Length: 90
Image (cartoon, rainbow, N blue to C red; front, side):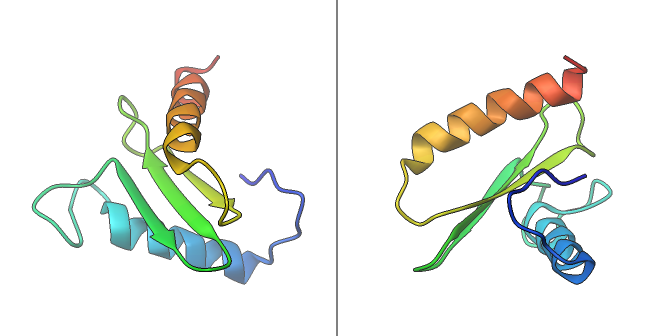
């Protein structure tokens, strides 16, 4: 599901899902570490992509694409709380 002010094409959404699976791991198997990760980020001069895995629902992942000039620590804390609400059905 997407919630965005931009119209990302299906190919771009698929690429984000593939990136999330690579960075976080998929199906309980890590891709880059010894265990699946709960958070990953990719930064460039034009954007910050943040991938978060729900703590109690490991198949729920939130991907956020943000501008480069933001308070990343605060954003991640707020995004984690949002994902917890979504995953718990609130």
